[in-house]
Amino acid sequence: MKLIAPEHSPPFDAAQKKAVRPVICYPVDDLKPADLATYRAARECWMRVQTILVPPREARCFDVPAGYFFRIISTDGPQVGDLNLWNADEHAERFFSGKTRALHGTHLSTGDRLWSNMPYIRAMATITEDTLDWYGFDEFGGSVHDVIGTRCDPYTHHLLSGGQYHHCCHSNLTRAFAAKTGRSLHEAEGFIHDVLNVFMCTGFTRDTGQYFMKQTPARPGDFIEFFAEINLLGALSACPGGDCGEEHSSDTSACYPLTVEIYRPAAPPVHWQLSPPNGYDRTHGG
Ligand SMILES: [Zn+2]
Image (cartoon, rainbow, N blue to C red; front, side, top):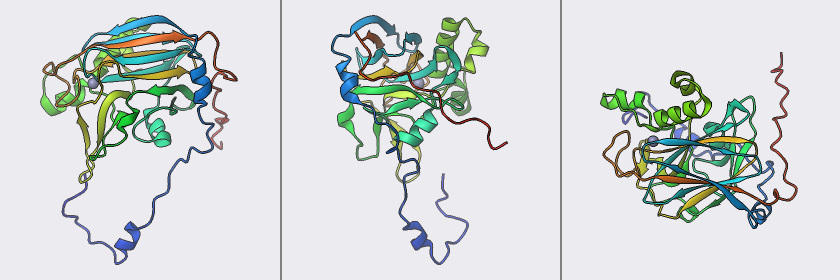
Protein backbone atom coordinates (compact mmCIF):
# COMPACT_ATOMS: atom_id res chain seq x y z
CA MET A 1 0.00 0.00 0.00
CA LYS A 2 1.07 3.58 -0.51
CA LEU A 3 2.48 5.46 2.46
CA ILE A 4 0.06 7.80 4.22
CA ALA A 5 3.02 10.11 4.81
CA PRO A 6 5.38 9.74 1.81
CA GLU A 7 9.09 9.92 2.60
CA HIS A 8 9.95 11.86 -0.56
CA SER A 9 8.72 15.29 -1.48
CA PRO A 10 6.89 15.72 -4.80
CA PRO A 11 8.61 17.43 -7.77
CA PHE A 12 7.55 20.94 -8.77
CA ASP A 13 5.37 19.59 -11.59
CA ALA A 14 3.68 16.84 -9.56
CA ALA A 15 0.18 18.13 -10.25
CA GLN A 16 0.91 18.29 -13.97
CA LYS A 17 2.26 14.70 -13.98
CA LYS A 18 -0.77 13.43 -12.11
CA ALA A 19 -3.10 15.21 -14.53
CA VAL A 20 -1.78 13.28 -17.56
CA ARG A 21 -4.69 11.36 -19.04
CA PRO A 22 -4.42 7.56 -18.98
CA VAL A 23 -4.52 5.48 -22.14
CA ILE A 24 -5.97 1.99 -22.37
CA CYS A 25 -3.09 -0.52 -22.31
CA TYR A 26 -4.74 -3.06 -24.56
CA PRO A 27 -7.43 -1.59 -26.79
CA VAL A 28 -9.37 -4.66 -27.91
CA ASP A 29 -10.89 -2.97 -30.96
CA ASP A 30 -8.76 -5.15 -33.23
CA LEU A 31 -9.89 -8.38 -31.60
CA LYS A 32 -12.70 -9.98 -33.50
CA PRO A 33 -15.76 -9.31 -31.34
CA ALA A 34 -17.91 -12.22 -30.22
CA ASP A 35 -20.82 -12.59 -32.62
CA LEU A 36 -23.43 -13.04 -29.90
CA ALA A 37 -26.33 -13.35 -32.31
CA THR A 38 -24.89 -16.46 -33.93
CA TYR A 39 -23.84 -17.98 -30.61
CA ARG A 40 -27.33 -17.45 -29.24
CA ALA A 41 -28.99 -18.76 -32.39
CA ALA A 42 -27.09 -22.02 -31.82
CA ARG A 43 -28.82 -22.38 -28.44
CA GLU A 44 -32.26 -22.69 -30.02
CA CYS A 45 -32.20 -26.46 -30.51
CA TRP A 46 -29.64 -27.36 -27.90
CA MET A 47 -29.88 -30.28 -25.54
CA ARG A 48 -28.73 -30.47 -21.96
CA VAL A 49 -26.38 -33.42 -21.84
CA GLN A 50 -25.06 -33.27 -18.28
CA THR A 51 -25.76 -31.66 -14.93
CA ILE A 52 -23.06 -31.52 -12.27
CA LEU A 53 -23.81 -30.61 -8.67
CA VAL A 54 -20.93 -28.95 -6.83
CA PRO A 55 -21.46 -29.48 -3.09
CA PRO A 56 -20.69 -26.65 -0.64
CA ARG A 57 -16.96 -26.37 0.23
CA GLU A 58 -16.09 -28.89 -2.49
CA ALA A 59 -15.13 -28.75 -6.17
CA ARG A 60 -16.07 -30.89 -9.16
CA CYS A 61 -14.58 -31.26 -12.64
CA PHE A 62 -16.56 -31.30 -15.86
CA ASP A 63 -15.84 -31.75 -19.58
CA VAL A 64 -17.11 -29.36 -22.23
CA PRO A 65 -16.31 -30.32 -25.84
CA ALA A 66 -15.50 -27.47 -28.23
CA GLY A 67 -18.70 -26.05 -29.65
CA TYR A 68 -20.78 -26.84 -26.55
CA PHE A 69 -22.09 -24.40 -23.94
CA PHE A 70 -21.99 -24.56 -20.16
CA ARG A 71 -23.81 -22.63 -17.47
CA ILE A 72 -22.86 -22.08 -13.86
CA ILE A 73 -26.06 -21.58 -11.88
CA SER A 74 -26.77 -20.30 -8.40
CA THR A 75 -29.51 -22.65 -7.27
CA ASP A 76 -30.08 -22.70 -3.52
CA GLY A 77 -28.67 -19.48 -2.08
CA PRO A 78 -26.07 -16.77 -2.63
CA GLN A 79 -22.84 -18.61 -3.37
CA VAL A 80 -19.52 -17.73 -4.97
CA GLY A 81 -17.73 -20.15 -7.29
CA ASP A 82 -14.05 -20.36 -8.27
CA LEU A 83 -13.54 -21.52 -11.85
CA ASN A 84 -10.45 -23.14 -13.41
CA LEU A 85 -10.27 -24.11 -17.08
CA TRP A 86 -7.77 -26.27 -18.97
CA ASN A 87 -7.39 -27.38 -22.55
CA ALA A 88 -8.82 -30.90 -22.11
CA ASP A 89 -6.18 -32.29 -24.50
CA GLU A 90 -3.17 -30.46 -23.00
CA HIS A 91 -3.45 -29.49 -19.37
CA ALA A 92 -0.40 -27.20 -19.58
CA GLU A 93 -2.71 -24.78 -21.40
CA ARG A 94 -4.91 -23.14 -18.81
CA PHE A 95 -6.92 -20.03 -18.10
CA PHE A 96 -4.78 -16.86 -17.75
CA SER A 97 -6.73 -14.53 -15.48
CA GLY A 98 -4.02 -11.83 -15.58
CA LYS A 99 -4.08 -11.41 -19.36
CA THR A 100 -7.86 -11.74 -19.44
CA ARG A 101 -7.96 -8.87 -16.94
CA ALA A 102 -5.54 -6.81 -19.02
CA LEU A 103 -7.70 -7.30 -22.10
CA HIS A 104 -11.24 -7.11 -20.72
CA GLY A 105 -10.95 -5.33 -17.37
CA THR A 106 -11.31 -6.34 -13.76
CA HIS A 107 -14.77 -7.93 -14.04
CA LEU A 108 -16.13 -9.97 -16.94
CA SER A 109 -19.51 -10.13 -18.61
CA THR A 110 -21.25 -10.98 -21.86
CA GLY A 111 -19.01 -10.98 -24.94
CA ASP A 112 -15.75 -11.24 -23.02
CA ARG A 113 -13.45 -14.16 -23.67
CA LEU A 114 -11.42 -16.26 -21.28
CA TRP A 115 -7.83 -16.40 -22.59
CA SER A 116 -5.21 -19.09 -22.06
CA ASN A 117 -1.64 -18.75 -20.78
CA MET A 118 1.59 -18.34 -22.74
CA PRO A 119 2.76 -19.70 -25.10
CA TYR A 120 -0.80 -20.53 -26.16
CA ILE A 121 -2.76 -17.29 -25.58
CA ARG A 122 -6.01 -17.91 -27.42
CA ALA A 123 -9.68 -17.75 -26.57
CA MET A 124 -10.71 -20.76 -24.47
CA ALA A 125 -14.31 -19.70 -23.89
CA THR A 126 -16.70 -16.83 -24.62
CA ILE A 127 -19.28 -15.53 -22.17
CA THR A 128 -22.62 -15.69 -23.97
CA GLU A 129 -24.99 -14.59 -21.18
CA ASP A 130 -24.73 -13.14 -17.69
CA THR A 131 -27.91 -12.56 -15.67
CA LEU A 132 -25.98 -10.28 -13.30
CA ASP A 133 -25.03 -7.85 -16.08
CA TRP A 134 -27.47 -5.34 -14.55
CA TYR A 135 -25.11 -4.83 -11.59
CA GLY A 136 -22.46 -2.89 -13.48
CA PHE A 137 -20.26 -1.12 -10.92
CA ASP A 138 -21.56 0.03 -7.55
CA GLU A 139 -20.65 3.18 -5.60
CA PHE A 140 -17.66 1.40 -4.02
CA GLY A 141 -16.24 0.36 -7.38
CA GLY A 142 -17.42 -3.20 -6.81
CA SER A 143 -18.71 -5.55 -9.47
CA VAL A 144 -19.25 -9.27 -10.07
CA HIS A 145 -17.32 -12.05 -11.85
CA ASP A 146 -13.81 -10.74 -11.17
CA VAL A 147 -10.41 -11.69 -12.47
CA ILE A 148 -8.60 -9.68 -9.78
CA GLY A 149 -8.67 -12.16 -6.92
CA THR A 150 -6.70 -15.36 -7.07
CA ARG A 151 -8.56 -18.02 -5.07
CA CYS A 152 -8.74 -18.60 -1.32
CA ASP A 153 -5.89 -20.86 -0.28
CA PRO A 154 -4.65 -22.54 2.90
CA TYR A 155 -1.18 -20.95 2.73
CA THR A 156 -2.42 -17.36 2.93
CA HIS A 157 -4.93 -18.49 5.53
CA HIS A 158 -2.09 -19.94 7.60
CA LEU A 159 -0.04 -16.76 7.26
CA LEU A 160 -2.87 -14.56 8.41
CA SER A 161 -4.78 -16.76 10.84
CA GLY A 162 -2.69 -19.86 11.53
CA GLY A 163 -4.22 -23.32 11.59
CA GLN A 164 -4.75 -25.93 8.90
CA TYR A 165 -7.89 -25.39 6.83
CA HIS A 166 -8.47 -27.90 4.02
CA HIS A 167 -11.54 -26.59 2.18
CA CYS A 168 -10.20 -23.42 0.59
CA CYS A 169 -10.96 -23.24 -3.13
CA HIS A 170 -7.29 -23.99 -3.89
CA SER A 171 -7.49 -27.30 -2.02
CA ASN A 172 -10.97 -28.13 -3.33
CA LEU A 173 -9.77 -27.59 -6.91
CA THR A 174 -6.63 -29.62 -6.22
CA ARG A 175 -8.62 -32.60 -4.94
CA ALA A 176 -11.09 -32.43 -7.85
CA PHE A 177 -8.36 -32.15 -10.50
CA ALA A 178 -6.40 -35.02 -8.91
CA ALA A 179 -9.48 -37.25 -8.83
CA LYS A 180 -10.34 -36.41 -12.44
CA THR A 181 -6.87 -36.87 -13.94
CA GLY A 182 -5.43 -39.61 -11.73
CA ARG A 183 -2.59 -37.35 -10.63
CA SER A 184 -1.38 -37.26 -7.04
CA LEU A 185 -2.53 -34.31 -4.92
CA HIS A 186 1.03 -32.99 -4.93
CA GLU A 187 1.28 -33.11 -8.72
CA ALA A 188 -2.27 -31.84 -9.24
CA GLU A 189 -1.65 -28.75 -7.11
CA GLY A 190 0.73 -27.33 -9.72
CA PHE A 191 -2.07 -27.24 -12.30
CA ILE A 192 -4.39 -25.10 -10.18
CA HIS A 193 -4.35 -21.49 -11.29
CA ASP A 194 -5.88 -18.08 -10.70
CA VAL A 195 -9.62 -18.22 -11.18
CA LEU A 196 -12.61 -16.45 -12.57
CA ASN A 197 -14.50 -15.58 -9.38
CA VAL A 198 -18.01 -16.42 -10.49
CA PHE A 199 -20.75 -14.41 -8.77
CA MET A 200 -18.22 -12.85 -6.36
CA CYS A 201 -18.64 -9.10 -5.78
CA THR A 202 -15.26 -7.43 -5.40
CA GLY A 203 -13.20 -4.36 -6.09
CA PHE A 204 -10.35 -2.22 -4.80
CA THR A 205 -10.91 0.41 -2.12
CA ARG A 206 -10.53 3.88 -3.58
CA ASP A 207 -8.34 5.22 -0.74
CA THR A 208 -5.90 2.35 -0.14
CA GLY A 209 -6.33 0.20 -3.23
CA GLN A 210 -7.02 -2.88 -1.13
CA TYR A 211 -8.90 -5.85 -2.50
CA PHE A 212 -12.39 -5.98 -1.02
CA MET A 213 -15.38 -8.27 -1.21
CA LYS A 214 -19.03 -7.81 -0.40
CA GLN A 215 -22.07 -10.04 -0.42
CA THR A 216 -22.83 -11.38 -3.87
CA PRO A 217 -26.06 -10.07 -5.40
CA ALA A 218 -26.69 -13.51 -6.98
CA ARG A 219 -30.15 -14.95 -6.40
CA PRO A 220 -31.29 -18.52 -7.05
CA GLY A 221 -31.62 -18.90 -10.81
CA ASP A 222 -28.85 -16.47 -11.71
CA PHE A 223 -26.32 -17.90 -14.12
CA ILE A 224 -23.32 -17.13 -16.28
CA GLU A 225 -23.08 -18.97 -19.58
CA PHE A 226 -20.00 -19.84 -21.63
CA PHE A 227 -19.33 -21.20 -25.10
CA ALA A 228 -16.34 -23.57 -25.35
CA GLU A 229 -13.95 -22.38 -28.08
CA ILE A 230 -11.71 -25.45 -27.55
CA ASN A 231 -12.14 -28.79 -25.75
CA LEU A 232 -12.32 -27.80 -22.10
CA LEU A 233 -11.80 -29.43 -18.76
CA GLY A 234 -13.35 -27.24 -16.08
CA ALA A 235 -13.27 -27.32 -12.30
CA LEU A 236 -15.59 -25.32 -10.09
CA SER A 237 -15.28 -24.86 -6.32
CA ALA A 238 -18.19 -23.72 -4.16
CA CYS A 239 -16.16 -21.29 -2.02
CA PRO A 240 -16.22 -21.86 1.75
CA GLY A 241 -16.94 -18.14 2.01
CA GLY A 242 -20.50 -18.76 0.74
CA ASP A 243 -21.76 -15.36 -0.40
CA CYS A 244 -18.34 -13.90 0.55
CA GLY A 245 -20.08 -11.14 2.49
CA GLU A 246 -18.03 -11.60 5.66
CA GLU A 247 -15.15 -14.02 5.51
CA HIS A 248 -13.76 -16.98 3.65
CA SER A 249 -11.41 -19.86 4.46
CA SER A 250 -13.58 -21.13 7.31
CA ASP A 251 -16.64 -23.24 8.01
CA THR A 252 -18.62 -20.42 9.61
CA SER A 253 -20.32 -18.91 6.52
CA ALA A 254 -23.57 -20.28 5.10
CA CYS A 255 -22.57 -22.24 2.02
CA TYR A 256 -24.69 -23.53 -0.86
CA PRO A 257 -24.17 -25.86 -3.81
CA LEU A 258 -23.64 -24.64 -7.36
CA THR A 259 -24.86 -26.35 -10.52
CA VAL A 260 -23.04 -26.73 -13.82
CA GLU A 261 -25.10 -27.60 -16.88
CA ILE A 262 -23.54 -28.71 -20.18
CA TYR A 263 -25.45 -28.11 -23.42
CA ARG A 264 -24.90 -29.56 -26.89
CA PRO A 265 -26.26 -27.42 -29.73
CA ALA A 266 -27.86 -29.15 -32.73
CA ALA A 267 -25.20 -27.44 -34.85
CA PRO A 268 -22.31 -25.15 -33.97
CA PRO A 269 -22.79 -21.41 -34.47
CA VAL A 270 -22.76 -20.39 -38.13
CA HIS A 271 -19.19 -19.65 -39.37
CA TRP A 272 -17.74 -20.71 -35.99
CA GLN A 273 -14.25 -22.20 -36.05
CA LEU A 274 -12.06 -23.73 -33.37
CA SER A 275 -9.98 -21.13 -31.59
CA PRO A 276 -6.72 -21.09 -33.61
CA PRO A 277 -3.28 -21.46 -31.99
CA ASN A 278 -1.48 -18.18 -31.35
CA GLY A 279 0.40 -16.89 -34.39
CA TYR A 280 3.59 -15.77 -32.62
CA ASP A 281 6.56 -17.81 -33.93
CA ARG A 282 8.23 -18.28 -30.51
CA THR A 283 11.71 -17.42 -31.76
CA HIS A 284 11.97 -14.50 -29.29
CA GLY A 285 14.47 -12.69 -31.49
CA GLY A 286 17.09 -15.39 -30.93
ZN1 LIG B 1 -12.77 -19.55 -2.23
